[in-house]
Length: 80
Image (cartoon, rainbow, N blue to C red; front, side, top):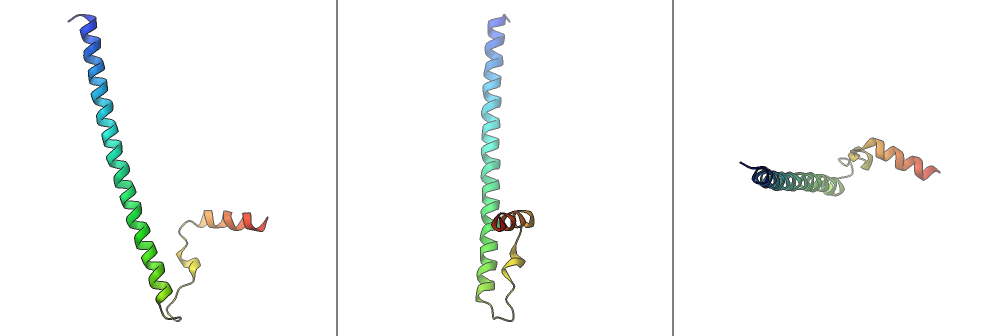
């Protein structure tokens, strides 16, 4: 096999590999987005349920904070 045919074959393989990788990344991205959406929906449902609960059963909104570090940074920024 001469070098030009070998280079062509290599380019075809690289293109196929890149195409497959892009498809895989796209699928993974969609799965991750779907998972985040599901978590967001569950979280919003918890907030709704809490809002509709009797006063004695309600939790403070701070009990629903997930990212404590970001919350603290926002509070610090607000104090400036």
